[in-house]
Image: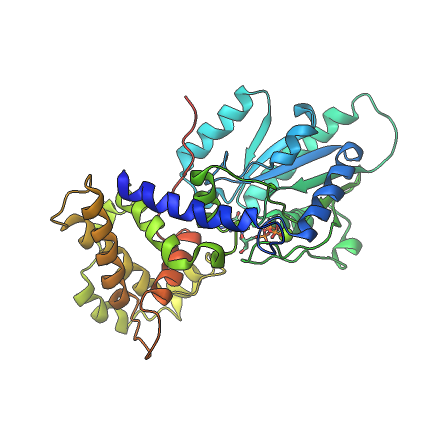
Length: 369
Ligand SMILES: Nc1nc2c(ncn2[C@@H]2O[C@H](COP(=O)(O)OP(=O)(O)OP(=O)(O)O)[C@@H](O)[C@H]2O)c(=O)[nH]1
Ligand SMILES: [Mg+2]
């Protein structure tokens, strides 16, 4: 698809320019280089390495530095944020990694039941490790990965839900979780189980020193592993729309009420009470009200399904994306202040909805056949 490819090239160029400027604070910064060395030094010392990847991009989010180190019997690939990815494809990815003789597990760090299952899985692996080892030493696990894949969120959830003594629960620590990549600056240890004692090390996210593939750069940028300022939110929003337009995700949105009639629904369903309040809790970093989300969905459905141009044609496809940005201004109820960049706010809001799973579930890396 020509239009998507030209967007990918543009994003790749922007990312590579930053990655290649060696003094960059945005890419492989001095603190990342130091963290990468500190992680590498600890790998031989820990019992298990949990390589956290983003379930939306199970290949593109690989922690490449690990290739030099770990034997696959001591590594578990954790596909985190599986609530944002296509469920069937996450299962296929887990099977794929298992076929490569590597343990893998899909996780949603915000889901209690899911974390409990993952804890059971970890404890079973630990029992296997200790089969031939009677020593009472504590078991250590280390979470490693590129930025923003959810290492700290996972460490916190394991610590909170883990089976540790009530007295220790009173002193729960927590790692810094943030929607911005690169906010964990040091390695910290959290206890997640007793008898035997199991500790998990949360580490700072590290990007590879070099990148060459435009597709990988684009996926890292869209999923939030790289700061949005590197590429620009508008370019990322265009890239997301190009993915949405070619997917099936928008198709069920045709059943939603048309935008003109939503106002009537809104009067007794404002989003601050009852079911909306409960539902908003599922999206901790997104406060867009449900009626606005439905407006956005219906608007996108109408834009794609009534588009007169040919989606195979690059120029037409690019035109559709610009039309979508324009109609989304209204769907998001954005009133422009003077001098304000027209599509900045709409792009930021659109990316936020995508990144909190409210505009469909996309796995951007296809499972190799
Ligand atoms: N939907 C969803 N969001 C998640 C999940 N895990 C983490 N997040 C969110 O992803 C963002 C990044 O999470 P962090 O735990 O800070 O990521 P990190 O890998 O520690 O990032 P760095 O410390 O920068 O390397 C936060 O906004 C989290 O709330 C998940 O399983 N599902
Ligand atoms: Mg972190």
